[in-house]
Length: 341
Image (tube, rainbow, N blue to C red; front, side, top):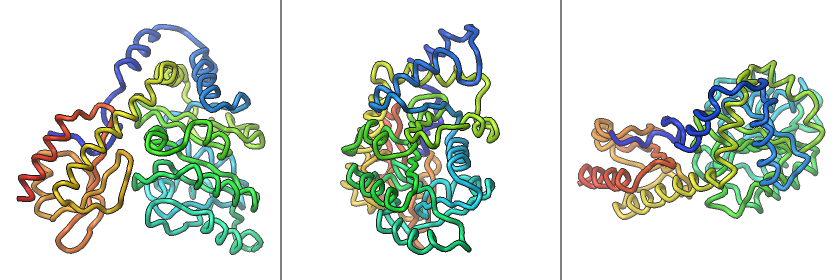
C-alpha cells in the first residue's frame, strides 16, 4: 500500500525519537516548566527575532486553535475566517463550543483577503446587536495547500490595525509554507499577534508551538490552556521534540523534503494531463480523476476523497511527507498511468 493520505500518520523522525528515548527516564517539573521546554522556547524566540514572545507547547492543533480563540476573544466577540478554514470545517464546532461566532468569507483559493476582512468589519464592527469581529484567523498553508505571501500578510496586518483586530495564524503546516514562499519565522512574528509552529505534521510525534507576540494577549494564557484541556502534564515530551527538531535546522529540512516529493508528484500528474482542483505549491495536491480510476486506486493507495467534481469525476487529495520517497512517488505515477490508460 502506498501512503499519500496525510503527513502525520507515521511516528517521528529518528532524531526526534532518539532525543525522546535519551531523556525518557529523566525527572523534571511538569506542565511545560522544564528545561527542555525553556530551551525550545528560546530557540523559537531566536528564530522569530522576537525575544519578548511567549511560547507555549500544546499537544494538538484543535486544542491550540480552541485555546487561542477562547483566550483572545471576549464573550461577545467573533472571529473572521475563510469558509474553508480548519476551524470551520474540521474542528467539530470547537470555536462555537466556546461561545464564539465565526464570520465566514468565501475563499475559492483557501485564502482570505484584506478587502474581505474590511467588508465584514464595516458590516459588523459598529452594529452592537451582532457579535463584534476581533480576530482574523488564517492558516498557512491553507486547507487547499495554497500559501499567503509576505505582502498578503502585511495587507492583513494593515486592515487588522485599521479596525483594532488581532491576526492569528494556524501554522500546522507553517514549515511547508515557508519553503515555498518569501516568508520566515520572523515575518510571522512581525505580522501576527499570535501564530503556531506545527510539529505534528512535520516530523514530531505530536505537538504545536503557540507563539504570542502581542503583550496584551499574554496574561492568563496558561490558565486558559488548563481550562481548555490543552496543558500536557508531561510537558517535557513536547519541549524535547521541538528542541531536537529546531536546534540543527532539522525542522526546515523535513519540510523541504516534503515539498520536494510533492513537486515531483505534481510534475508527474501534469505529464499525465490530470487536471487539478487548484494550483497548490505545497505538499497537498488535489487531482481530479475519473470515478472508476478513484475506485481502482483505493486497493493500492491510501488517499483522501475530497469532493465530487461532476457526475463522472472526483477530486482526491494526495499529501506528501518528510519520509515520502522518490520511489513511492514514481510508483504512484506509474499506477495512475496504467489506470488512466
